[in-house]
Image (cartoon, rainbow, N blue to C red; front, side):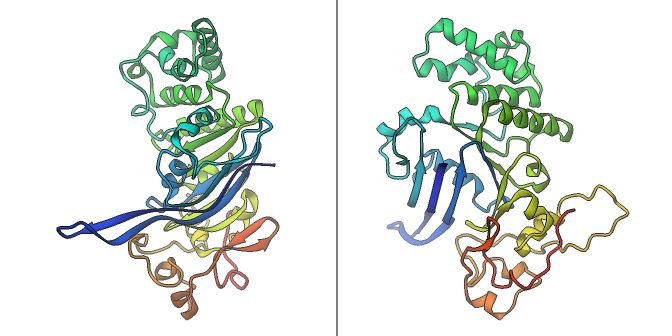
Length: 333
């Protein structure tokens, strides 16, 4: 059973100009995204900066209003799935305890004037948990994220970036959410600390059965933490596949380009993967046809004129590429 189903999600920002501030265009930050997350599954949403990943995550949590589309969320409490995209704010608030976010910047997301114990206890307090229970729950959460009990009486500035992110994870788990949205949770951390946080998230997945949307721009980060990967480019999903299959044999040239950016563990081994040239297309003025065609080494005339749709490709895969069936793209073994 799917916990979350996103269908044809769009988030457009109007461009206004002139004395009367008339709309002269639109930035299509998210332009028709569809995917699902099953219970206990982790879906990684990857792509370059500016492709719309964070906008998708914030729309799902209704931190941003949605232009159109459906976001069906099943609480699992014997009730039918609700469409978060059309639900009034008053009705969304009781559902927020089931959906929590881990933010990209572990320091900016924590109140520097609050002690760690108060930060973790805040969602409990907002949801009416008694003070005695809050204290016990805070200690339990600190242990869960491998932080010492004494951390609850200290301020965020006293900790390293990795420790602050552990505090952010503890706060996100305080209410036992059914869905956790992790918005690039390790991109601001050192490489060695990234590994520690990834291992922590893996452990929490096993222990708590978390369902997670893991947003990242680095494919090397998501390989070990995700069950499936959805690749985004200029507001649209261009490929979806089980993680192992995507790394072994990508179907979209953009996925191959992202894999080419992953550092090779053996510097003497020459890669045959092609790195994409140029910049990400402008979502306010995307090129005709396939948005990736100006950077694609395999593009043909059809790619420049006709926009490909996301189509099933067998074995739980889908791809948005006219030449997907004929290309032999290089993956990561």
